[in-house]
Length: 213
Ligand SMILES: C[S@@+](CC[C@H](N)C(=O)[O-])C[C@H]1O[C@@H](n2cnc3c(N)ncnc32)[C@H](O)[C@@H]1O
Image (cartoon, rainbow, N blue to C red; front, side):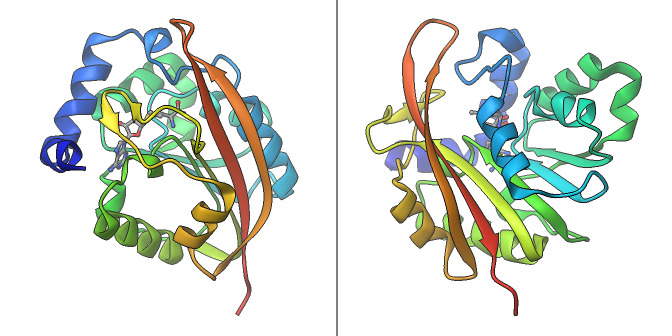
């Protein structure tokens, strides 16, 4: 906890340091195929013109895969401009079709509503209860009524740290409690992610739907 409060002040520097010194396929969270995310996005059943935001998308290949599937309105938000630049360079000309936002999610002020909010391995870094409250507040402002939420975190028996930072590990029930009553848990699946250096990491992926009204 203490470690992250110190790190938080330099959160942006931490991530910038990583993305500036490591090649994209070297980072622990790298996935050549974000299958579990794509399966849950498919389960949400949204249309190709509906708005998707990937929170802390970093240099993830999810945006490429969403474009390949024909999604036309995709936003990637990250605290690290270096991460966003890696994704933009990889996409080349196609990068222009994506909205890129450099922001700390806990202070993000959305100017529109999204139909699907995706977060893999970002919420779990919020070890401070106030930061989690801020995140949930932003999410409530940003997700449209009837919209979807997909959040992946380390599972209860996953590693206690990610990228050298303490994390909070979740069960679907404890995550649902943090997310609050405005969202109904629809799906929960486990994934055993293996890092590029061969370390197994247990994740949970939860899909929620925003209650109407
Ligand atoms: C473990 S990586 C996961 C990246 C991506 N979601 C994936 O699955 O490949 C965490 C990402 O969250 C970003 N991040 C960390 N804290 C953040 C914050 N407070 N606001 C926005 N992005 C943040 C980092 O820059 C990094 O790209």
